[in-house]
Image 1 (cartoon, helix red, strand yellow):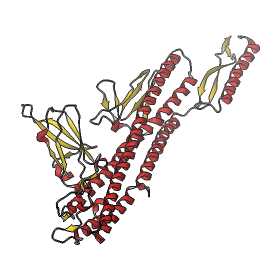
Image 2 (cartoon, rainbow, N blue to C red; image 1 turned 60 degrees about the vertical axis):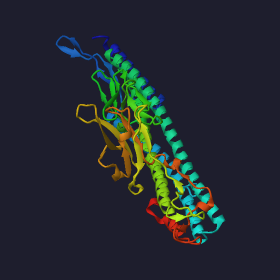
Image 3 (cartoon, rainbow, N blue to C red; image 1 turned 120 degrees about the horizontal axis):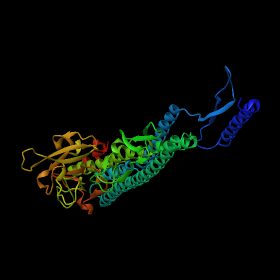
Image 4 (cartoon, helix red, strand yellow; image 1 turned 180 degrees about the vertical axis):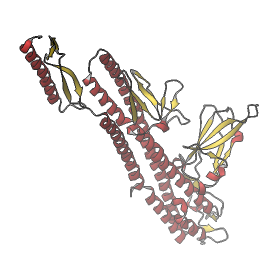
Length: 457
């Protein structure tokens, strides 16, 4: 027999020496992040034939395996992605809520003081100090609109910056994952068991999941493929497909997420989960809605107050005068040099908080003519009649456009920054009714009643 009893005993000593070394390795790395416990698998040596019988030759180390459950690992990645998403979303939503609901700096106190000043003018329409106080409160209200819009814009800039840095982190992790994949494939090809490399790869995938929701599939050669969005490949074996963060739409100040350095495909709407998904969601469903809602309030206030103010007369006897400068929609072209359509607000009462995209399509008559389609953003729902969403869109003035060109229409996005007062002389405040005398405060009372109008809802 090979080695006899001494050889068999030596095989046992060597096998358990490796088992003890593995146990020591496990203990030493008990607090190492991402480390998976390892276990030595023992197997009997091939027996040796002697005559008509076979005799055992001892024990050997069959393999050193990782004690890891891939199902649990997958569930952990999903939970990590969801937890990071909710944490980031809550942080930004809390900031916006605190900004708009703040008792001292929010919009509601400014509105209350403004309409309180209107009521004071209604109580004493000939009082010049009351009229001056009204103009001062109007300016303060305008400044408050602009302040809130500026603060929301700062949050938007912060989100854009974090989108860029998160995309950079994702690309760095993807490149590292590709290199580890290559090392694992090489090790497996040589018959080795790369346990520490597998731990490192799982740790990289968890870090990726913290930043974006993902799915994985393992190749036959041991490499792990990583997909994000609705199946866009981020890592295929040792190759990576990096993300880009740049403006991919009409707004040059808004960062989008895409694939491909050239002919970049915008996948922003497909990204979910993790920090990146939360940032994109915050921008679309919190900041956009908050800033658009603030702008809608500014437009509604200006339109309704002006409508009533034009029905009265000031101490100078002039009628049909606006009190506020009504903000206008923002229109952004997809290409430089395009002459945009003329977009005005036809009915502030039906104006929502959504944006729209005006898209040029071939009219199908073969002469190069264009039809223009108005679609909601996001979603892309076709708007047959712009008046149903409170807009009047004149496409006849558009010049230089071809099929596929578009204009992003934001009816309320910049309204809070645009609103201003049009009068500076207290005598121009139209507190009196047109048919009344100087002491007639009928129009001022009507203006004061606007505080309960739906435009402030």
